[in-house]
Image (cartoon, rainbow, N blue to C red; front, side, top):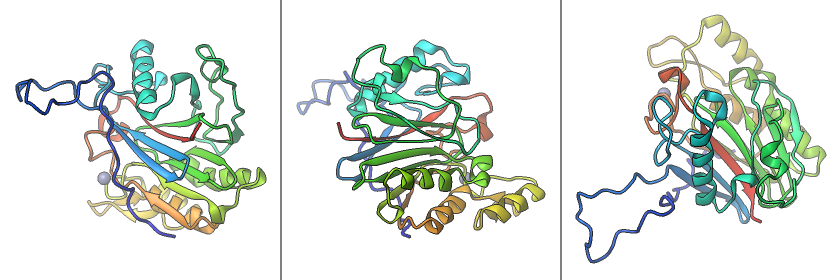
Length: 287
Ligand SMILES: [Zn+2]
């Protein structure tokens, strides 16, 4: 297992924002809108992923600005606009982005290709299923995970043409949502030895303080997840625990985006902010 940091990411310019002119036509002080916070990754040829942040969207405080979740209390129009901006930056359309109603469980579902029916496609109009992990082999269909501290785990077996996404917070990690997802992918033809994984931004072990009994219970279920916080109190390092789960399942290539949501102001953190938005992890096969 390698734990290299996520590769340097491209940050696309917000759609419609003019590129800076070489001739200095615009005064330097006239800053345009902030660049859209979307980090694009390539997991393998034809397999793309992205993590969004907070900059470049339209949501108002406390959801400012690129909130991707309709379940957070933010206005639906703002979230729809943010999703449109992110979809464009990813070369997708919002009707090709699917979401889950995340319930901190370990259920896994397969996402069928909803067809390319354009606006009104089933991908957006059907109620999101209550689950925390899903996989698909449909090209050009993005699987989305919403987060404000919990690790999003994105997986792909490029040879089998199967991609997957999991929301693996504390309860889901303890329940083994990522191992369950790998079993489901394997049942559909994927091979863990060919599978590539990326674990997204999350609250780090140095910040994630929990009661000692909780730390011990999770650490017993997920080796490597128990830790001490920077304050020397009982803590959990969920990304380390998930990396161990992936390794135990035979996944050899694991990247970790080691940004801490509680420390990085360009990410949403429920721990830090309480009422706030959600950023997204997205994975898709090239259309
Ligand atoms: Zn931290």
